[in-house]
Length: 181
Image (cartoon, rainbow, N blue to C red; front, side):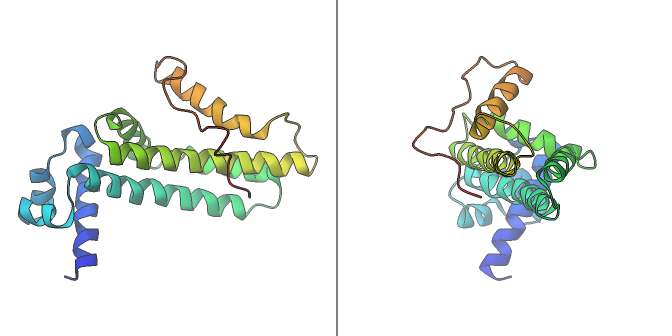
């Protein structure tokens, strides 16, 4: 296998194990067993399991974001885009995907690379939603005083649903506004 293919195989194996066991319970030995290789091979390609987990989460969550972005882009109006966003975002055909997100958030404090990847992708999802709202406001289809407040609404709702104190999840600063559509 080429180094790139080997790295991808390790990431895929880690993702398969994490789906079954969760990030917190997955070890390098588990991934090696899934792949049928030695633990040393995994350490040759990744400095830590945190890096393996971040790469695995990037693949899974990134794929979901790509699917949702394409579904949104295929719709003609902001209302239709919003419907496509929520239909794609809340798919029920992949219960493991939601569990993986929750698991990544739970492990973020102990796994810095996984936490950084999770936060970056979470902000990308929020930005996609904010861009839909911006298009709706610009076209007169929606009314919203602050389309970018969707980022805070999302985090506040997540904190509430996970029984976290308000403000437990970091908010993007004013110095880093959502990227333009």
